[in-house]
Image 1 (cartoon, rainbow, N blue to C red):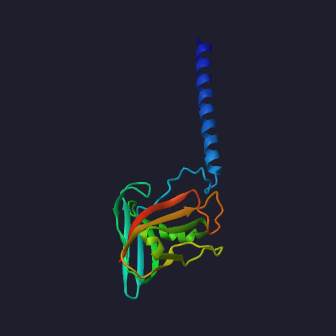
Image 2: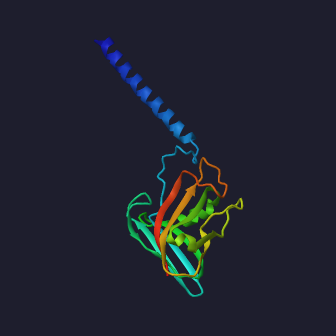
Image 3: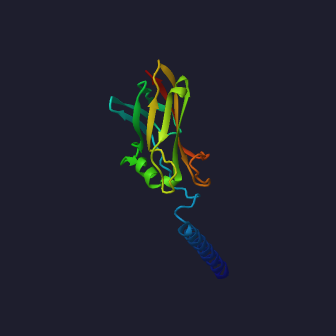
Amino acid sequence: MNNLLLTTKATAITKAALVLVITATLGMTNACRPVNNPTDTAEEVLPNVVTLTLTSPQGSTTAVWRSTTDVQGTASRIDTLVLAAGRTYTGAITAVNDAKSPTVDLTKEYQEKANEHQFFYTITGDAQSRVTFTVTDKDGNNLPLGLAFNVVTTSGGTARGTLNVVLAHYDDVKKTGTNRSPESDIDINFPVVIR
């Protein structure tokens, strides 16, 4: 009977030791993982509000895209970007996540990590031949960033189209200033009208 009791205690101690060894090993594995490792499971914060603001001496225009979730979700608000014909605008884009508390200003993050990001602006539809977007800000490698831009519209009648805004995120792909990364943090469409 005493031998059975000793064997049971030895088995329990062995199991407890094994659990401790496994726990310690897992702890060391996680502690040694680099913070910027792509396999890091930390939640990525994406914007749920994207705002375009265009100003000119003759007046300004703003368009807001808002989602109840994030840029992968369905828009709960999307404004039409209304542009005047024959006008030059100075533009800026901002992105925040106000579903978080406190609100996360992602515009600042894109500025700080400019070498890893680039905005692309593409007009389609009837407005395509009437609107020119020119990015005016650069990253640390003198490549386009796209938080700031100029917009020029030509004279003419009413034209409609869509403005596709993509924020390419460069992790595994080298940023060249013209290539889009397959990974994007923003990919949304604003209706556009020129009057």
